[in-house]
Length: 501
Ligand code: NAD
Image (cartoon, rainbow, N blue to C red; front, side, top):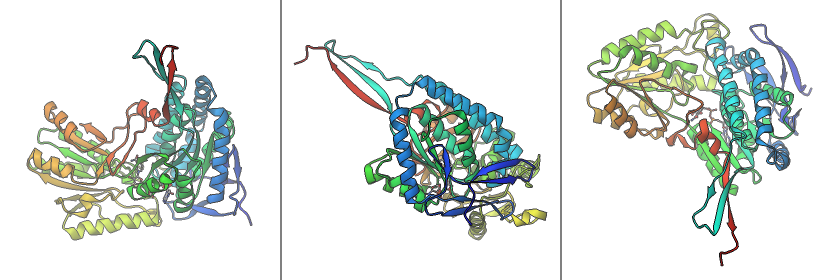
């Protein structure tokens, strides 16, 4: 029996959803050509939420052709028209905020009221922000010689492929869709195979907003098949990727087929440094936000903490007490649940194996260090928030991305020592420092190898401010004006005023 293109679903909180299951191409939901499907699993229970159609190479060709056809007229649209459609779409997101948060909680294991709802709210703000930019994308007039003038046009790049991870399904997609569409590009976006549902739902709202067919196409599908077909496609002009560093390397290779423009937002192992003069209460609060938010499945998680020897014991104790008191694990539809399940069985097992590695390496378990077996939670992929102390620079839990609610705390003596440790990994996404000494704070901000530095906070993300990494955390920036420039290219026009040669 073939899968219907829409299924009626009642979510655990009673929300009723008519959930699309097809590939969203040309403003319609369609079956994959071969009929291939995949199952989206509920991480809270391990049960199948819904099957959806899975794109294969032929489907990617069709989606890219739709985007190419649409680009011919979309690139000629006015900025005001593009902005108005984006504003309208943001209004529709707002109207459907609760439903989208419920869908995200169900499919990705984010606690609805303390996590998923904030993603949807930020998505709305991001659309409004870039809607405002759509009619303000301007080139420059360049005049050196009075007998000649030159100007630049900031043109859209063309058909852009966008590949999204599972940890922030709506938000990571929106960070890419909004600037790209505002700048006049057309898109084929591939969801993670693990979390397709909320993004397919956006397709319905996209049609309702009134965008022309083919501007945004959303496909689900496996990375090695659909993702690779998109990244290597000869008629795609740019590929924007968020995901692991290992996949980022494959994407860059695949994109070399036609020398696509590439932006990569990859993994991280961000340090958080607590100096002896820091406000310990603040450091504790932000350190917890920095690692326990979204079950530690955040690329910028401050997953390594370096506390100065003078305040180390005090910090570790207060940090553990705070996490135990504030980071409650439970049903993701509960009002006070904060830490949900890990995204999948495979990922859960990977995190548990890192916890095992940490124990064997000699790190001390301060709290957690085990699966949560309480009540119904035992059916899902819940791991207790885990703090390791007494960590050493060569441990694997210090150098490798775990991507779970697991943090490694170390003691340091000198500024030189901690700077060297902070910069020792292959990653360079975020870095955080707590101190009241402003000179030291800014010196560290300059010397830390990271795309983003937080002084006296952690994981402070602001849609007006560029987001991205250095080293093997990727290149290119999202958000703010910098994010917009990733979706335009400058064409130079030279005008001979009649007197040159
Ligand atoms: P992943 O690399 O496994 O998958 C990401 C996406 O790439 C998925 O859509 C997947 O289907 C696709 N993919 C997989 N193999 C592919 C291939 N060969 N060709 C093309 N596409 C392919 O990552 P994940 O497990 O979904 O997400 C977790 C990772 O994402 C973590 O490493 C995290 O740090 C990173 N991340 C980074 C940022 C950032 O902004 N820097 C944000 C969120 C997540």
